[in-house]
Image 1 (cartoon, rainbow, N blue to C red):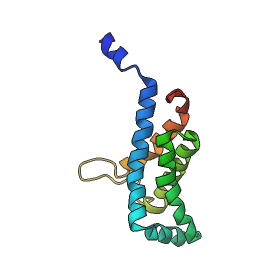
Image 2 (image 1 turned 120 degrees about the vertical axis):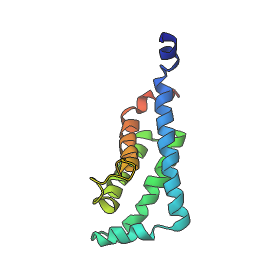
Image 3 (image 1 turned 180 degrees about the vertical axis):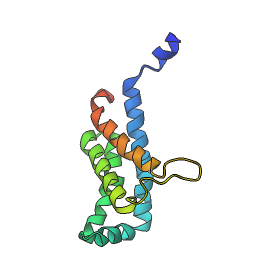
Image 4 (image 1 turned 135 degrees about the vertical axis):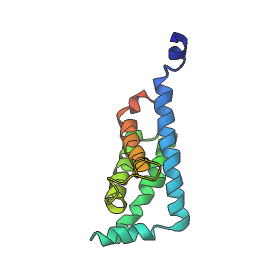
Amino acid sequence: MNALNALFDQPRFGVLLLRWTLAILMLFHGWAKITNGVGGIVGMVSAHGLPGFLGYAVYLGEVVAPLMLLVGFWVVPAALVIFLNMVVALVLAHSGHFLDVTNSGGWRLELQAFFLISALVVAFTHRLGPQR
């Protein structure tokens, strides 16, 4: 058992793996915005009384910040942009789903929670990332 524990005692690799996972999964959402546009988000932002152009900030949280995480550039600000992006998504698109459970018994907001918490973990553990 000690050999197995020693093999998996790789906190730097663990943090890097989480950072890359967050970035790649978020990029899929960003790619959807690139290919399909952000009209729906602009509409949600406007419906909440905010200027519609703020909807375009989703590109920062779902394209620019994940790319920054992938290359290790300004990791903490990039992770915090993703965190903020998820807070806004929860407020605008998912505020009525906090107590919802899916047919399979899971929480409806599992993916959003993963993105939100993972972004905070990446920000808090950035110093454990790969050495430069």
